[in-house]
Image: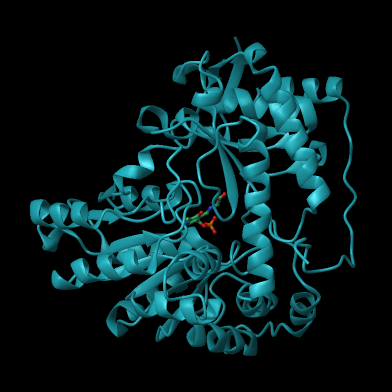
Length: 448
Ligand code: F0G
């Protein structure tokens, strides 16, 4: 059989609510044309993010009931630690309430003004947490990643030669760690090859610099390696993930992505002294080291999710279904970041709407139009989010895990193609009000 089906059946359902075009027009106006400010009950299909929006399995819900809510020494923590240790091999597993909490603790301990932290591409919370300590976050993607249309197997890779040059320029003493984001979210959800992780590790080790993984989507990355990189086709996703982690000295992780959890994360290291400092900070803001800002039931849900996510049937379906959305719109003329990534499809809004200049926010204009037309929520990743630093004007359609079926995705395909057919009528926007930072969350717009 060639048909790829959802490898699950549905036991509990959440009704969707339809709205009329007139209603959506009113909601848009009231929200200042910012989809973050629209109430979720007015959204039909929500592709804002794949983070914390996944569906938990029956086994995860059962684990929730097993959660041990003891303040200290909870059995839930030990269950999570056993699974996370077996997967990552790291000696210290420090739970946090989500990924950015792990980032904040890591950078508070490791970075200071004058430091530089290179990555293939930093996610925005990672960048913000680095910059908050006075250090500089530097992106070193491979040059080919600049072309949204280039179809490379591992377009999320870091430019290892550029890393070598950066270390030569800045001096290793100023670089407390090198990071690799797998998969590369800001770079289109593109994977990083094992060969690239090994190459970056070699460069970093030669200079005595630790390598960290931002491992949010480690399982999707492992599947791409199995499918695309020579030598891994007989490996299980778990074996590939174990090898990826074995090349790193530590990791940050948001369990809201590749652990099917609605909340949670952790920070890992093999360095005992560092772990002690991190744990001290954890107690200050997150909580005791055996719960780290989470309920015992959350720790148990993550423990089960970390194993489920590596199931080959799930990963095959996951990557195929993201590709299905990508191919069905791209092969009918909608420019996307090629090839389709793991967790999302990114429409190249600058290329699709060449009549809207960057300062009139083509990605945002497209997000607004897709909501107006079909009740679909997506997110701009371009000049609204990054200001003048934006390299592309993208619209991200992020796919929550195990939530939407193929017919939902067919509806999204139809909506995107209909919007594309009359794209010349889409107008840009101007900013009416904006906060001093992270403006995409709360800025208000006016249509032009
Ligand atoms: N790193 C990456 C690569 C991410 O994609 C995210 C979150 C984080 C770190 C932070 O994790 O949200 O648990 O604090 N990405 C979400 C997104 C928000 O929509 O892509 P968090």
